[in-house]
Length: 185
Ligand code: SF4
Ligand code: SF4
Ligand code: SF4
Image (cartoon, rainbow, N blue to C red; front, side, top):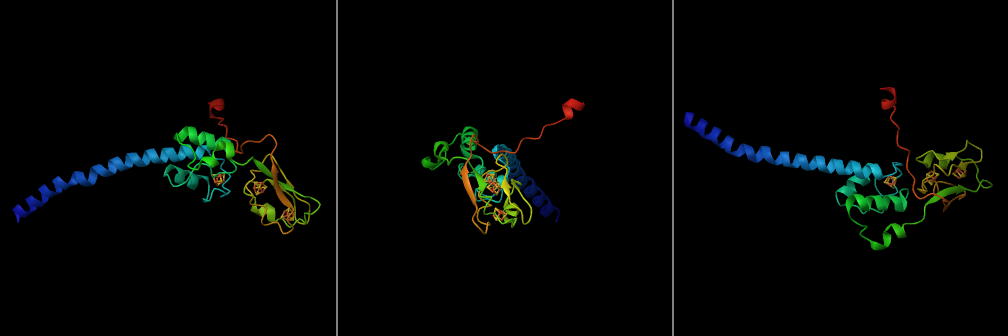
């Protein structure tokens, strides 16, 4: 019995490194991957509009970091985001025709206010609160807030929303929060 216990103890000692060391390596890889995801995510506009085909900016960043998505899929980010992702990752869009130069021009939504019936459906669809209006009243777009994500177009029952070129806009991004800690310290 003692000999059996001794053999088991020796086997446990011999096998322990196989179970302990790989997770350490994998853990380091996970940390690197998480950092890469965060850096990619920080370049994305954070509108969470889903136009890239993913549930939001972070899932898209995870897909890019995992090599499962190309870098030109974010319309609100436009050519500027594609270039920033190229610089960060050292790779170009897999489809050459979808590079920054070929990324569609930045657009914003426009409402034909004579046709608007004030149904509020576009307001509910907009992920960045870029539409002003109340029930039964004419609605308007705030161009500076609009990302051109297109999500308000389909819900409009009278087809009075179109996307038009956005003069002077090349990228949409929430302003970064400014820390007041240094000023108050
Ligand atoms: S399209 Fe861009 S802004 Fe919209 S969810 Fe995807 S990454 Fe975020
Ligand atoms: S395109 Fe429409 S839904 Fe998208 S941000 Fe502009 S107003 Fe909002
Ligand atoms: S969905 Fe169309 S009709 Fe309804 S409030 Fe918006 S712009 Fe007006």
